[in-house]
Length: 247
Image 1 (cartoon, rainbow, N blue to C red):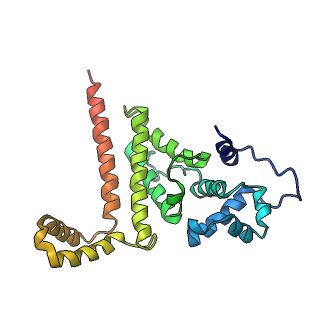
Image 2: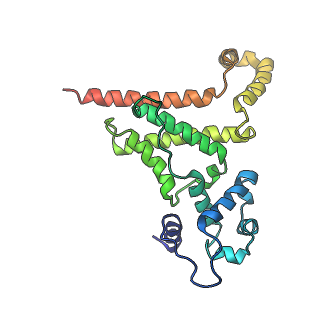
């Protein structure tokens, strides 16, 4: 592990030592991360800088560098604080925790809500990087939900990655449509409606499909359809794996 990765691991996992020199510390890593998150939530990740965070905290940029070496480490702390530990599932009163499908569906919905609240996390979590304990707890929850299904460890990991990809895609669409309250399907429908009205004869299958979708008048169909089809695919694989092991 190189020095940069080692420093990232120390910041995210600890131990956290106080600066050895200078005046008595007035900051801590959670407070620094919260300041960065407030800027990113309001203005976007591109507007987060060491200078902006220092100004928000009422300290000099050099004072901030005593705690965080640079923006890459700052963003990593922000991601960990924004994502946080995976919340425990909340079963309905009088009902058990549920099987793997119920657990993964609840998990995906929780993750979607988090990404919609902090859409900048999309850009901050691309590519190989050091993950913090909170973020890893989300992966742990998804993989453990598939314990006992007959899937291999690699397949359980891939299932979690597949669900995360769906969450990310829907979040990106919502963000492009104007944030969590936007309706990308309605916006796309309006654009397609104009095109099909003018050129529908060249695209008969698309025209028929568009007319059917318009009749349903449903929102979030892409999210719900994709989520259920991913879970259906996992169910089919789990059933096939169980059948292959029957005597």
